[in-house]
Amino acid sequence: MTGDSTFEFYTERRLIQLTGISARNLSELLAGLERVGGSSIFYHTHHQYLAHHFEKPLFYNDFALWISEALQLDVLAEQLAAIDLLSFSSIRALREEIIAKIRGYLAENPDNGRTAPPGDEFYFSRSKSFVLPTGNIAQDPADFFRRLPQVTNESLFYHFFEARLRLERNTNDFSRWLADRGETELAREIDSLDPYLRSLDELKADIIELGAKRGWR
Amino acid sequence: MAVTLEDYAGVIGHAVVDEIRALAQRVRGRRFKNINSTAVGGGVAELLTRIVPLLADLGIDATWDVIKGNQAFFEVTKAFHNALQGKPETITDAMLETYLETTETNLRSMNLDADVILIHDPQPAGLIQARGNDHRRWVWRCHVDISNPQRKVWDFLQPFVERYDGAIFSMPDFARQLSIPQYMVPPSIDPLSDKNRELDEEEIRCTLERFGIDPRRPILTQISRFDRFKDPLGVIAAYRMVRKRFDCQLVLAGGGATDDPEGEEVLQQVREEAAGDPDIHVLELPPFSDLAINALVRGSTIVFQKSIREGFGLTVSEALWKRKPVIGGAVGGIKLQVINGVTGYLVHSPEGAAYRALELLGNPELRRVMGENGYQHVKQNFLVTRHVEDAVLLLLALDHPDEDIVRLW
Image (cartoon, rainbow over all chains, first blue to last red; front, top):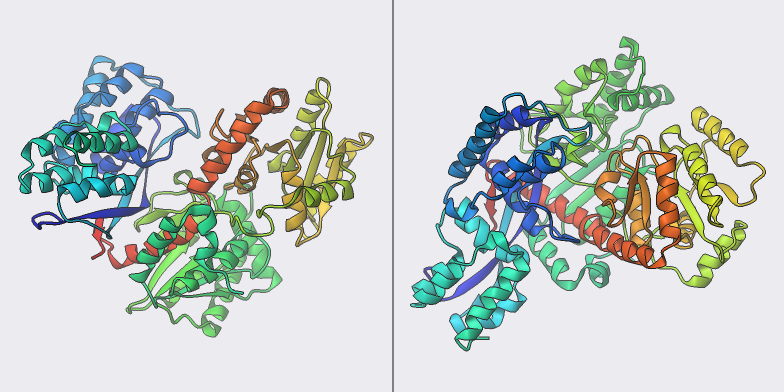
């Protein structure tokens, strides 16, 4: 998709896998975090961005959400939610950070025995992503910005989240391709948009805006 | 005329239809055999009736076969079904023997030639014994909650289950740790079926009047079998509390219970409890009453699904699809469908159900907003088209067992 003079938008569909691993309290959550595959860590820190929400979720990070809602440990929930996902270039490092935060909390609050009410356990899941080309191909940056408004959230999710963290490409696919086309400043500006602090719709609007400033719309 | 995915474009949009077709292209011609234990009646048969033709429309060679068994066998599997869900049930060695014998008979008579064989629920699970060292992939689709099974029945079934290439559950809470991959595929409703399609006002009004229900006064409805776990008596208790402050009618409608002695007993209790109140309508509907159920729900103001124990509870999605706020028990799959305060309310008691019903009865705008939310929630998550897509993804997943990101180009 990049390294070529054109840019083809890809999209993805996902099948949820269950691990059978669940947790009722922090110690069990920690044990699960150490045991599950990286795709489970990715799933629980990212899938909320793709889900349809009637209102903005309290936290996009499932671990933070569960710790807040089921265990009511708001300090720890906020600490986990505040982890800057953009500063990680691998799932392994992200997992270590989440584990370290929980361990740190447990060390300071050793007698914390809070247990989720029955029915509110945390279930570790993961997703299997199926990526396919959309046939939507941009010939040059101007064409890219003409096509961008029609791009789906699933497509954005793939080019931003999957590409950067799961495929360890360090940046998003849009920036990579634009930099290759000589648009290094624009590539940098898109790369500095934090996709974790906005919804995918907002992210798309912000990228479209950056293109519009250059007369591409 | 055969159903096609394009028939759903009006609901889900052409783009989604095209995307599902593009995915299915990658598994075109795949011989995909579904096996369950009944051709009519029950959620699984209803599901397969809708999904198999749509998969065929996508170019997948989808088929559906049914195992044969005598009454003794189905009594055993009914006991299994209960025991798997943790209900008290005595499982004897003779019962296990009956299960194995019927499985053996079916193994001798059934054609198990396919690329992928999807076995639904415990009844046909033993067919996995036909698994050989060949290309066939076997998947077990479990529609019930087996998170807390009785030991004896699970010890018996587990060795069968773990010979499959994968298992599918409706929600994470229903699964357990297994040595095989597990997938999550929630059940779904068909927006074009008689139970869910749009009806005109006249049709709805006529149905209500046919049952002696007044279309001009508010109607609270629960559609479900007469089963203790659906708590029909709790619904009546809630209605009585509401009735003191708000004029309304209650409809309790469900299928007949001729083959279920316990159901008959519950129905009797419900009738006794309702006796003397002309505004409580206890309707025992014959099979094939889908259009009547559709009209009853569409004519309702609020829908209850006040279960105290539940599988997935698809009646909730059926009501949400009709833009009805749902007051549901906070159990099983109801928790995925009723987003508390958004598509309805989750309650834990008749008092809770009454309180929320009063709140909704007094606030038409709240009902409208929740109804619209419910419709959108079902559209995003619980339509048959999503289910068909998941089936296609399952076939692809079996082709790529070890990849987290599968590149389809």
